[in-house]
Image 1 (spheres, rainbow, N blue to C red):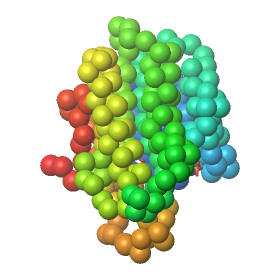
Image 2: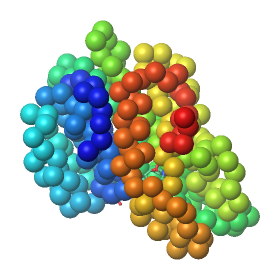
Image 3: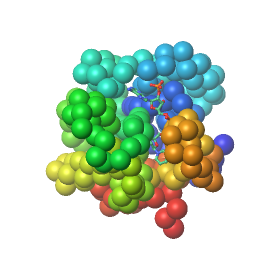
Length: 253
Ligand code: NAP
């Protein structure tokens, strides 16, 4: 377990997309340690079984007492999946929480192929719909359901990548989506100044996405265990002294 210096996020509604595997799962395993009693964690992904296993694991933790964990088996590439997630997020009394934290982590790698091969708008739209639109619509819906009020902290995390800023040949889908998401969340930071917004690049991690990268490109990297970039992200959210809308990298000092 990582050291969070006895700080906590309060009585928090914490929504984590892509919680079934990889980085999202690791965040879900760490975040309960910094929540107060009465908090609720929403685990969102398509794999219901993996989410249920994780829920059991989290419910067996001794702290915090009274942690409620909900699984939302939803496909965020569809309108229905976003709606189901929003319904689950906004169920109950909005005054039960003094902090709402949305971690937009779910994403896909997509096809890795030359720019000139992307002639099918349907393929591009499907990628954009999941990787950009769903994060916008879900975050917007949560912010609408939890409007600004005294004593309510609102934090939005966008799990980003170094490829939000660095063009990589054949990675047009992934780079474009990450760049768009960073800008989208910068706009949010400018618009809603009470919302603390962070785009966080976790570095290369040992996950299924990296296995997919290896399969598709033959390129392998030195990989971090997810826990390390996860702990850094949660410490950033705890300390909250980054400028809202900032892009922070795991390797930044
Ligand atoms: P991963 O191992 O592929 O996991 C992706 C997660 O997203 C899974 O929980 C998956 O669950 C969920 N997901 C995928 N499609 C979904 C859909 N249509 N609807 C709902 N959930 C869906 O990826 P990861 O490596 O942990 O990546 C997590 C984040 O970190 C991503 O934003 C990625 O871009 C970013 N990142 C990763 C690395 C890296 O080296 N791994 C580096 C920089 C940034 P289901 O399959 O159960 O739906």
